Length: 230
Figure 1: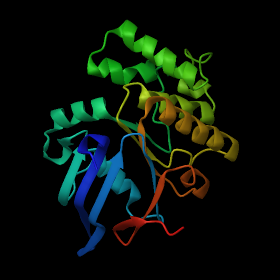
Figure 2: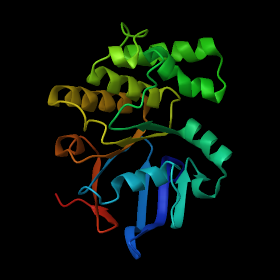
Figure 3: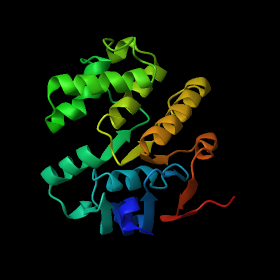
Figure 4: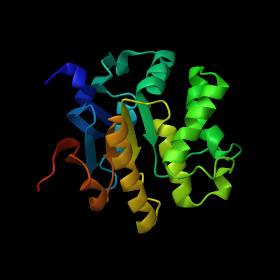
């Protein structure tokens, strides 16, 4: 496989916690590669370590052992400032709860990652407007999160994740807080944007319907990541 086609990779990833004096293994020598444009789902029971894996891959937590590579750079060896720049350039994040800033409009929330990067305000707002229109929120640009429905807030969160044109989006239960209709719209939106931008998606989910839309489905069980049994 051409390394240039691999946007996210981890090798021998391990994570342990101490709990009541005992050592709990959350991740055990996890290996994973996500290629450009690929959609990968990670499933597993509650507490299996799915979110922990996503946080380590996104540079939000540190592994106890192993390597994490993002867009060809060794993430786990970077300092906080370098790690933040790499996240801003190469990764997007979508969570179960949207985490939009309540005091800002949808347009301002989506433009925020570009402003943090140092893009001119006019360019950031124009790009944010473009993404919001693509996710069906062109008429809601000036609405704050409290004025949007749950499905609209999550679509704004997807737009925010994609506004920087990341190589890979890490999504943690992106439809877990939505009803079936809005969850279906998020599935369709992710597939459409994946096809349009060739952005990779690594999605942690317990929903089989969402996992069925992915190119690969993996299961995290007992700290070990393996291919799902068809």
